[in-house]
Image 1 (tube, rainbow, N blue to C red):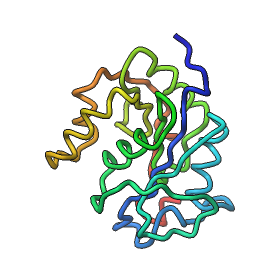
Image 2 (cartoon, one colour):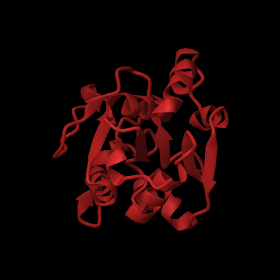
Image 3 (cartoon, one colour):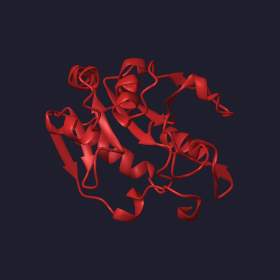
Length: 178
């Protein structure tokens, strides 16, 4: 089953604590743009539409609006669940702001791989990932129980694994990683 790109929305997560980074990662500059701008651009290249999910209270100075994830908890599972609630598509491809090497090609491959499953992720873990709306009840139940490990939630879902170049899957934890 081939996914119509209009059945997919990209979602950028900007609600992380950035503890090791020392400042909001979303605002860090890399190759002439902020990490958030880069992530948003790549999602737009892949799917033609994207939402940004984070904490309204962070008041990040970004050129697009941030949809609030509805909680003070800072965990990727919270952002993924909020993206599924906010999106007007059955599939949401989620990228954290701290993965500047991800390509639109990878994101499209994840969306395709999720057809007939609830989630598709690369071998490195649950993000980036393509999450189907049917995954939302599991994510919400685990959040309510305080079980915030996104990968553990994925193990409860019908998950497809995509093998991909590890270089594209690197995240940045310190300014030196840029």
